[in-house]
Image 1: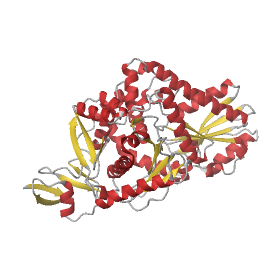
Image 2 (image 1 turned 180 degrees about the horizontal axis):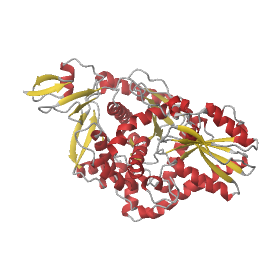
Image 3 (image 1 turned 180 degrees about the vertical axis):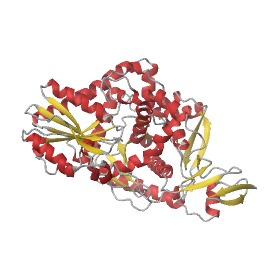
Image 4 (image 1 turned 120 degrees about the horizontal axis):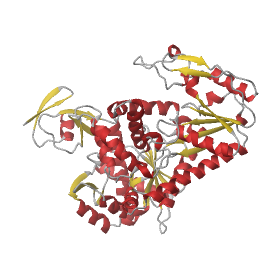
Length: 549
């Protein structure tokens, strides 16, 4: 017998018992997706160790939610395999993951994508859910995995495992279909109860429950601009010949990385130039820039300003933070802390008064914010602009219609900047854009703000909550979206962020996230940062750049 604890209560269990069997025995629902024991994540099919202090994780925990989504993805590809065989598995490609939806590009020329085919896929998936099939996990040598995926035509995984440091690899199986996935799975198909499948243009779209719920599977709000910029990024990846992690590792080992970096930077500079052209052609004098944390907005603003200067314009950087109300007027969160992410922290009336005054040719004494005192102050010298001046305004609320409601629409150009991953692990495993931004932030926080990785990881969920409330709902308001992600950047960030992640103690809640990120970074070889230009957005995070950040 073994002694364990669940939520502070002691249990004696058989030594062969799994976490899922214990869950069922003590009466917890099958909405449980994962377990945590002594600060380590555990799949429910694992056997329990003596002395475990167990927390069962339902969909309200971020790791459990990711487990549900990943398992649904495996279920989807099992249905593809059952209906279309290996050819289908290799030509139905996971392209995008937007919020709670997966976008699969269907590339089978001899079997056109129809609504009937999509209905068959969904029916096959629901049949497997009804049968409650086991999701089995197998460990094989990495050489065996390479041979298996080579035989089934999955060259993306062959290239990935070529650089794998571990001698063994875990794969998952439903029925006759076996695949490799980055992360944990639920124990059986019956857990994946809620999803919807539909055809949308060239995509099969699988919509899953919204974050932290199993009930709401409504279609996501259309995001055509975001989807377009993601498609553009994938086309850039094709131009660069680096769609997957194995591709970039090949570039590194073949000595082609310097050229890759130069081409990537040139693509972004060309896109920046086109944005500047639109601002000039539209005779815009106010440029509003918004985006989530660690998107590289500061470097973007500087590089855009240079493009505008080339055309004889005079850009003036303005931070929306300088329009904060006095600290005591800011709203508070339920825990009593100030909610600095809320738009109620902005003096919208003052912002609109200043902008309209400047557009009218008046001299305006602009505010600035004293963050130490928490007070709104005024500059000593007024600002006046002419026809060749452009106001470059950056802040998280830049795209919120409330900020520009009383400003002349014809004078405004709105830009959304985000770091949307251009790279995938392989055909079936996406890299989450939020992971890339978190790694950027960990490096920057340590370098510029004296924050350790543990603190940054601890604050990250509240950062994401603030973005979901204040930034993401307005991203489609933008006139243009700019993807600041670099296809090579994770191979650069790796050398900076790994020591910071390893420094997180094992006996704290943040360790499991650090462990996940370290495992993810293990896919990449390193790139020497000497190859990174001084004006690159990556320099905003690793340092050594030419812009003040």
